[in-house]
Image (cartoon, rainbow, N blue to C red; front, side):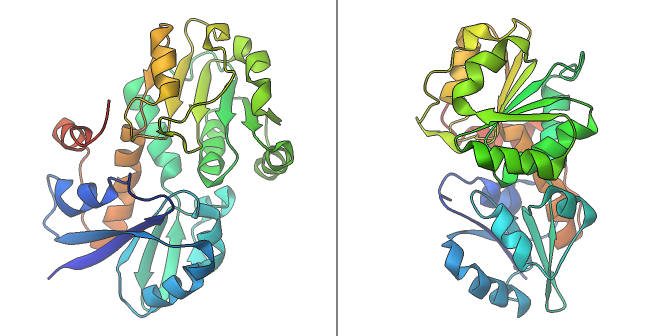
Amino acid sequence: MTIKAFVIGHPIAHSRSPLIHGTGWPNTISTAAMRPSTWPRPELPGFFQRLRVGEFAGGNVTIPHKEAVFALCDSVDPLARTIGAVNTLVARDGKVHGTNTDYLGFLGNLDAGAPDWSAGNKPAIVLGAGGAARAILVALKSRGIPVILLNRTRSTADRLATEIGGDIRAGELTDFNIAAPSAGLVVNTTSIGMHGSRFDGFNLDLLPSDALVTDIVYAPLVTPLLDDAKARGLRIVDGLGMLLHQAVPGFEARFGVRPLVTKKLRAKIEATLEH
C-alpha cells in the first residue's frame, strides 16, 4: 500500500522532498509517495479539509506558506508555537498537527558542516524575516548567538525581533555592509539565490576572514551568495544538509520509521542539483 504525502509551496519545482521521502531513505520499508503541489494562499483552507478527511498522511511546507499554515492547524507542538511557523504537517483522526523541524535541520546542518561554527559567539547576520527565519532565530537563541536581523522591510524585522525576543537587532538589507565586520555567521533565509538571483550591494570582503556563510536555498547547491563567499576564501555550508536533517523527524511522524541521513543519500540528491 502506498502512503501519500505532499510538499506545498510557491515556487515548488525546486523541491527535492519528493525524492528524499519517496525513494531516498536507505533504511525505510514504507512506500511513501510525495507529490509537490503549488497552492495559492487563499486555497490553503480547502487543502486542509482534504487533509482532515484522510487524503494524505501529511507533508512538508515550504516558502511562503510556513506562517499561513500555522493558523490552520488543529494543534501545534510547543516548539512550533514558539517559532510561530510550521514546516511539517501530520494528519491523523480527522485533525492536522503542525510541527517545525527547520530548527533541528538548521542546527544539524551547521554542526555537521562546520562543528566550531558557534565558537566565540560573534553576531550572526540573518537575512529575511519570514517563516524560515523564525526557526533559525530560535535556534541561534538556543546557542546564545546574538543576531542582526536584516530584511527588505524594516518594520517586519522589528516585529519579528520583538516576538522572538533575546539579543536581536533589526535593520534593512542595505545595512549589511555596516554589520558585516563584526559578524561570525551569515544566514540567508530568503528565496534569493534561486534562478540566479542575488543580493545587490553586499561587500563580503567586509566580513572577518573566519566568518561562515550559509544559505537555506539548495537549488542551486551553490547559490550566488555562497559562490561569492567561497571566492573570497570564506567558509560556506550549503542548504542541502538542512533539508535532509529537517526531513528525518517529519518522516518518522508520518510513517513510523526513523530514517538515516547518509553520504549516499546526500550524493543521490546532490546529483540532481546545479552546482
